[in-house]
Image 1 (spheres, rainbow, N blue to C red):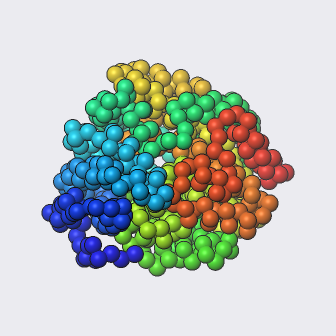
Image 2 (image 1 turned 90 degrees about the vertical axis):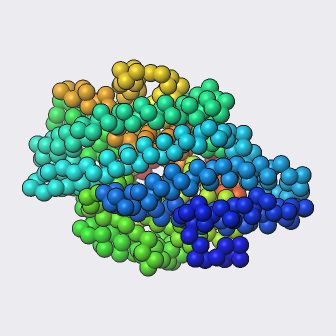
Image 3 (image 1 turned 180 degrees about the horizontal axis):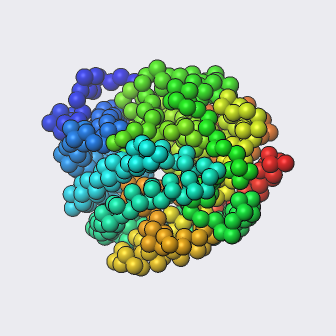
Length: 568
């Protein structure tokens, strides 16, 4: 994993340090395919160093959004390094793809060269300053949301820490907690709308500069979505509407009846997940009290699944690659980031002791395992899988860990947690379709007004959403999309979750029949990284990539059968 091309102490956070290496790659003599392979290898080594430098700056900023020094260091990288990297990457791509010997390269480079040619086709120099502005707005979104705190129950709490109150059996507590959270979010609603307005404008300009009618077509190319289309996404939405929405309404109907209320209010059911207070009046599941308990319990779970997974997870702790607690100034959400030079994954989340936190930990660990399995692949491009398959790694780990949840729960609590998870999968799929369909409309109609945006959002809520009574909070409902980080920071990164969920459910089917076989399929497919097209990655694990109603219906059907078994 070492290379003589750059020194180990190379500081890749400054362009003046990167530039000599970049010039070497752009000017060295190339006479044969072997020279191209060396160029690819050396450029990969440089990319590893630069990627890790940028990732570490981003991690530092998200872990402490109130630290002005960390924020400025990250913004310096965004403003002063990334633009020059974009120009360099395009020049290098053109040098590689335009060389006569490129056709003589071994087949292992076919997918890489295809992606390079796509990148060349959409690159425009005039988009570089626009992408800098885009990144700055995304960072402002992180700063705003990371600063959100609520005075509640006599203490200052982060929004993730408020989640436990939304599962309280006392409806008045849930309502007061929900009101406190939404009141705090409402304080920044205007600025968040302004940021989104500006992001839409910038992204549309980026697309038109690159010769596309709108951002949808641009982003499909930028994301290298070769194996499914805009129409496939629309078909997927229809399938979810036919299969998942009726089952979601059934689940919510049972919740309404059990709670003895005329209508579910926003504090009775989770907006995104479909979960909420236990319908039998039991206290919220609290699998752990401290982050140390979460780490040790997950270590035991993964060791029980396989010594290999357990060893990978323990390595994260030993390498100080976990930042899990929720605290003031920490950006919201959770993620797993690859440190490409050291080939060590890093996990970030905001744990507050809930079942949802346990799921996040297992989910991000799945990503980390994927990174570990593919870490031996030589080139950085070979190690970074398409997001649609990266999420299979995480979502299938959630499901395949079910038998081990006794590590955190009694037998009854574990059954309850599993049922809750399966119900949330059903309810998540319509939310995913809502967010994806919303983005399709937003970027297909970039000149829309805020009123039109609110109207379409509400229309999608009527199509896919729960029948929740928002009386008295109509304005909040119109801007409830602001709670979805992906809309701001990773546009069009959401349908991947739905596609991957279908893959994860298929791995779960294998696991229900033969756990060892499923884990072998998992390891084999995850070790491929990005060396094969998406359908072949699915196929390596014995999974089908599909969007139709029959495919979705068969998977959700088995899920519903398992849910019935758990609940009886």
